[in-house]
Length: 467
Ligand SMILES: Cc1cc2nc3c(=O)[nH]c(=O)nc-3n(C[C@H](O)[C@H](O)[C@H](O)COP(=O)(O)OP(=O)(O)OC[C@H]3O[C@@H](n4cnc5c(N)ncnc54)[C@H](O)[C@@H]3O)c2cc1C
Image 1 (cartoon, rainbow, N blue to C red):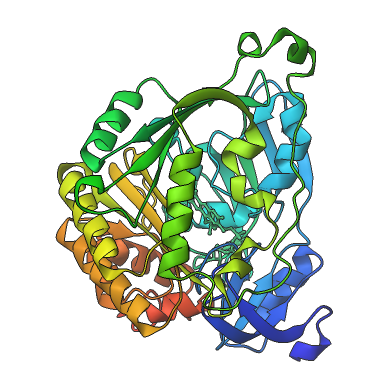
Image 2: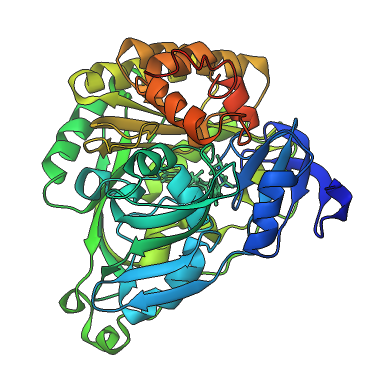
């Protein structure tokens, strides 16, 4: 098969949402499942990377040495069982499309990441988590089954009961076991399209951790925005945001008849990439102070869309970080060392002066059976750093060392520069993953730039791999 003979083939610059790194990639955009299967078995490139909406930040959905398979044409809903809330759909459908259709009908996702502009397949492959991981677990908890096209071109159906090993290697497996083409997903009923939200200003990390611990049982959702530029007695200065789905009784009487109306703010986007100097330490300090000042302690009702996806309201907001992009970083520290780990991370960030505008801290609950799933019981910190050059990457490697020292790990969907050695030390179930990968894909057909950087593929010893 010649690459140019496939309809929809292009060679173009591709990046994740962080715009770093950017790689020239062969990109296929197949139209139907049979074309997809043919690509898996016969495309001339040695390796393939599934790609959904490209909302992972780094190089998870890039493949400069092979080809990227953009699956966005597989975006249909197939069936819905109102009694059980189970939706069957193709894997490239976005969470946004599902919400737009189902929220007005009284259903929402049990678990959603902070953007709805992701594909279902990408969300499963990253085993994404939301602001309610401590209560509801990660995406895999609501995936009933999926169909996976593996390297041989065969389709296999996987669920926690059937082909369970492949199921748990695929959730969080970053597209390396095959291409998910459809899935059954559990939706949850909601009475309204609103959230009852409480904001609380908090002066210090210790108070924040105390308040989060007190909230875990009473609120489905809890997340803290943290001022990463604050230090000393203000370390961990934050705004804690806690919420539950609003009931009809929570709404003012005049809104009850329209309780499920889907409200989505359409706001202007960032029209062009900002100059690299825009997000410097001074502007970050100012923005952090403005955010803190603008969120006094209060209770309010917020549309689901505004609560879950505040950044989706600004199209292409990632351009605001300049042409060198943004380096997202998310780690988790287990409960036993969470306080010390969070303090060490925040002190390191404040001392480095590189500054993160959007810093978020939340609780994670027990880990899933996903071999490479990120969440573990503890506290997670997500940060974004304007990519101002090698000193930022060095600062991230210092954070990796702190995370390792405290027994934690870094999230693959946000990673662009972790080393293979750190990754191996953070993910103890990697040998099991490699063994299953070898059985499913002995020639390493599915790969990615991230997988090669982290040693997730290649150099597999068939004698010892994971056994
Ligand atoms: C603003 C923002 C907020 C975010 N908030 C959160 C959050 O709160 N929690 C969280 O967990 N994540 C969060 N993320 C990360 C995001 O949810 C994940 O990166 C998700 O995987 C992106 O989905 P996608 O369709 O864009 O996948 P892509 O970025 O295209 O791909 C991600 C990975 O999935 C694989 N993949 C994609 N499609 C398939 C498929 N059909 N079959 C097999 N593998 C596939 C790719 O190979 C790649 O390894 C956030 C990202 C952004 C930009």
